[in-house]
Image 1: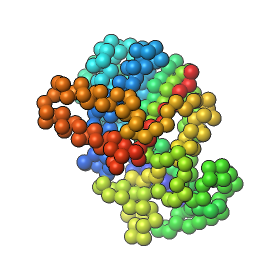
Image 2: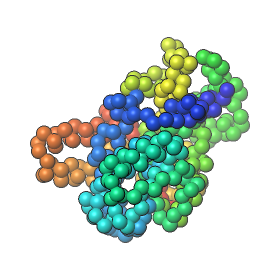
Image 3: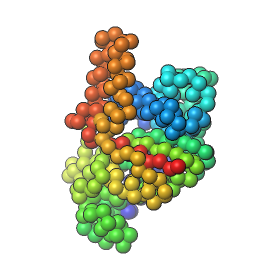
Length: 329
């Protein structure tokens, strides 16, 4: 089986890892920025509020999270927007895009628990269902969850039992590798189609996403398996595919040059590409923490400051994760 089809089934098949709701954080297989601190969502919301104040973002914009898991990020953003301007909860529309019915139910339950009837959550099973005038799209760790081909010097990977085999790659893959200076590594499948759906979902939009990776290919394999906060390279000799298939998360570093190429081909302009640390500081994270310090106890402040360190420290998430921000006017 072609590796990208194998990975698609691994994550999204009938028994796939993402087919049913999975825990994130201490109870899950991995952490995300969202599970680390509510200040992550608050900081993005602060950037949105500033955009509204400046007239760049309309007050009746849709705020839509793609791949929202339980809905923590979107809820944290709504909470902060309400803090800044309570009327925004009435004028804005809030939605998730999530294909798995089980996960959509979990999101509804969480929003009911957190907001009751105070916030109306719209839900779309696909971007193809979204047709709005203005949308601010947000996602976190979405691009690394696209199935990918494994490429090595003109060959691509297939899976046969426990073995990864190499066959001659199609001209399309070889051309992509040549354009991007890629000798070996991952080539994601679906970025182009995804960018087209984003562009078609709104007459005008901004799209903000955080993920781990680099703008240029590292020319090495980064694909790996996460389970119980431990990591195994896919090519680890001790890793048995039959034991981890569909029971673990499988991921790789994002080639952001590929993302940029796909989005710009659909008429969207790159507004920002920068480290997560630089982006969150630019958006006002430090100022939000200072506001919190004036209101909270010393103990609560230190606890939040420690969590924020995880978000921005260069040796933790700060440099490894990147923000990518597109707009269409």
